[in-house]
Length: 226
Image (cartoon, one colour):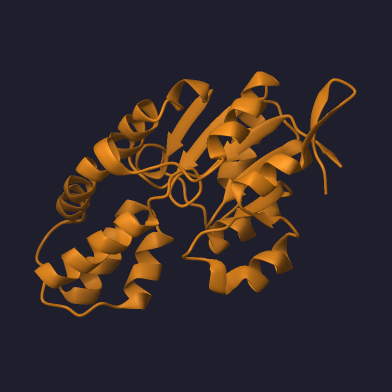
C-alpha cells in the first residue's frame, strides 16, 4: 500500500482514447507522400516528441520541408478530432475526480501540443482539475529519461515513491520506473501485445475501472493498494 502525494497523467492513450486518431493521421500522411503503411514509422513517431518525430520523418523519407512545417501539418490534421470528437478512456474521469477530491495535485505531462490537449480537456470537462499542464513542445522534455518526473516531483514537493503516474507507453513506463514512481500502465489497443513487458516493469497494468478499485483512503490520506 503506497501513500499518494502527487499524480501525473499522460494524455494520448491514457486519458484520451485518441491513438486511433493518430493511426489514421499516420496513414493519411503516408498516403500524401506516396509511402506505404509502416508499423515501425508509426511506433517511432508515437513514442517521440513532435520535433524529434518530424526530424525522423524528414530524414527517413527525404522530405523537402522543415520540422516546424511538418509539425504544423500534423497538428492541423488532428485539431478537428481533438476539438470535436476524441473521447475519454472509460473510467478515467472518475479517477481524476477522486484524486482531486482528496486534494492530490494532478499534473498533465504529454508529448501532444497545447493547441490539441487544451480544447479536448476543456470540452470533456477535465481541464480545471489539473494543477499543472506541461507538454514536450513547450517545455522541451522527453519521456525517454526520468528527468521530467524528477522535475515534477520537485516542483510539487512530492517524494518519488509517493507519486502515482499513468502511461500507455512502454518507453515512458521504463522512465517512470527508473524515477522511482508508482508506475501504472494503462491498457490500450496499441500496447496489449506488450503486456508482458509492462508487467516486467511494474505489476500495475490496468484499465481505469481497475485503477479505481486500487484507490483507497487510509488514516485520512489517499493510498494506492497493491
